[in-house]
Image 1: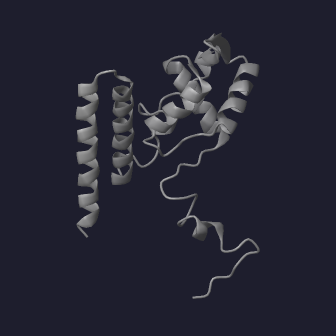
Image 2 (image 1 turned 60 degrees about the vertical axis):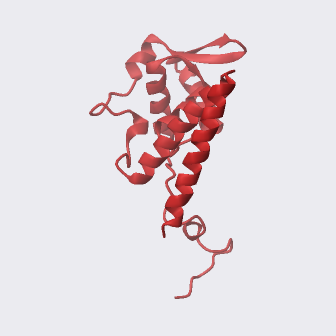
Length: 170
């Protein structure tokens, strides 16, 4: 079968590993970013970068919104009077206004905007656990206890070996 080339090469789907925008990536509409920000701020006040990392962690790495989608949306929400920003330790920390609390999207069967999708897939489960592992490793890395750090290094080394053993099973 001969593939016809566009002026940019082969079709974008073929160049990126199949249909959509890459394996396991979660493309979202602007309204989803808005809903996600409102839902995050319903949990607690936070700054923009914190929202980006929080969404990445909560989706097991499937969705890491860019600063170019988060910050303009925050500005829009601020202009609409739904969020307010306060300078805390050199960062703008956003929180919901009273109107913002009313605008938080209703939970559908307990779900938040970032919880929609393929939660039951093995890929999602593995990515979720990887991000949990990274979170625990970051906490240990901040520790000043050499014994804990030595134990952690051993566990991580063993985990890496076991993962390569799985790959070698083929």
